[in-house]
Amino acid sequence: MSSPATVRSPSAETSADIRAKLHHEDPYAGFDATAIAPDLQGWNGNSPFFGELINKLRPQLVLEVGSWKGQSAATMGRALQQLGGERTLVCVDTWLGALEFRTDHEDPERYRGLAIRHGYPQVYYQFLANMVHAGLQNTVVPFPQTSLIAARWFLVNGIGADLIYIDGSHEENDVYADLVYYWQIAKPGAVVFGDDFVAWEGVRKAVTTFAQEQGLEVGVRDNNFWILQKPA
Ligand SMILES: C[S@@+](CC[C@H](N)C(=O)[O-])C[C@H]1O[C@@H](n2cnc3c(N)ncnc32)[C@H](O)[C@@H]1O
Image (cartoon, rainbow, N blue to C red; front, side, top):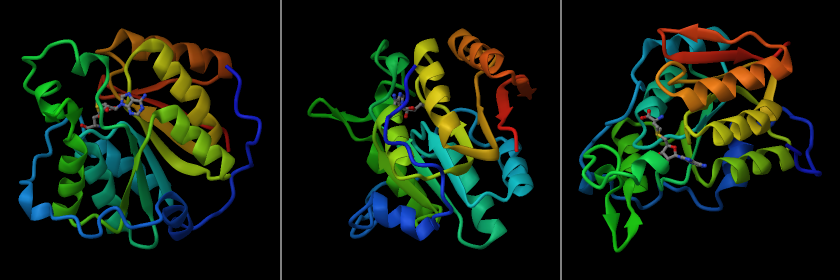
């Protein structure tokens, strides 16, 4: 897969620079979170593994691809806050779901969780409210975009990340594409990881193929998380 032509090498931009580049206006400004009760339904987002990785790497910039209502984002955001300093988690998601969110209209978590009104999902506002309820407005920045367009945005802006969690589409080709793009955004020594390595064949195949091509070893944790580390 080819990469964008205008890629800049990762620089040491501050979290404030990245926030300002992403949003002309603070996405939380004027947002009434009290109108939406907390609901952090999600998948594998409460694992202590997130905090362990964050405490070990002490990342300045973390990227998450696939945030849904913000379960894993809240776990990582709290761990970043506890470390102190200027640390940011950018959450990339269309908040439109993935294939499995559209295949069963009776699924209470996925299809119903999209909270579709007038044909368009509203789950983004649940995410935003959850971040406010968790007091994470200064740490978590939403980036409502497809994973690949967001990746190109990071690349053309020369933004490198220390930790990247890939949990968007679980289709093999999509996961592979996310890996190809986000691997370029990962700084030397950064960790790129995801979940569903055992439960989702497409995820396992994509990660295994990518790791073989790059000569990397795939770490597996809790029979669920896959882990790749970029050589320092
Ligand atoms: C499994 S959920 C994420 C779960 C979340 N990490 C948690 O802790 O519960 C997958 C998310 O990826 C998003 N997604 C799927 N494909 C995407 C794509 N190509 N670009 C951006 N977001 C995508 C969906 O909208 C959905 O919110």
